Picture (cartoon, rainbow over the protein chains, first blue to last red):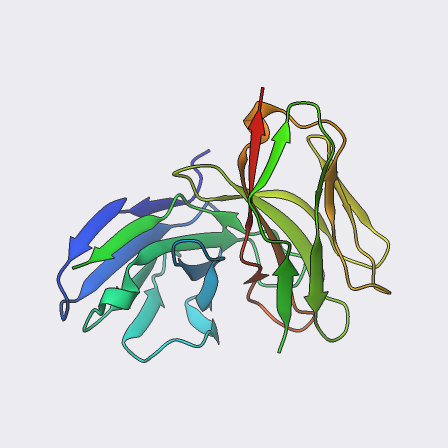
Length: 114
Length: 112
């Protein structure tokens, strides 16, 4: 079975541009979460979607948005890119959204803003 | 707010040495606790978890016990291998929350 897949794996963008990152969850998983991992730090929670609805949002500006599609795949969009948005963006999928639910992570998209 | 504090690295050990990586947390109620491992160039892999006080999570020779009285979840392994070299993250999921809250990570380097 395929794990969580993210695309692209690497991306270079210029300040002010817009970027879309994509995530396909494990088959049967209905929850997708997005995390930002800045070099040398732990991942920071951005969004969680469950059954196509936003169920949680971290402390990120409105430039960050996301959505989940009927097939449970998800997109993360970032507008007006800043140098500080350079990071590894991780997607995690899980069966549900409860406290004990295990999250499975993809390999991430490395975004570099220049 | 809820948070996780890990010992700072890097931790450098010889093969077959004993490993301890300290992790303490701040949270209300009874969060679930996790250890994740990240190998170079890869995403996070769940190493072990514990969902209630006094639970012991274990996997691949690693162990951690959920200590409510000391709000700790220290990771231990009796004999490390070179292949254990990676970054280890302690994390919690709040009792009433959905997001994972991670520590800053501890880099482990094992030499032969």
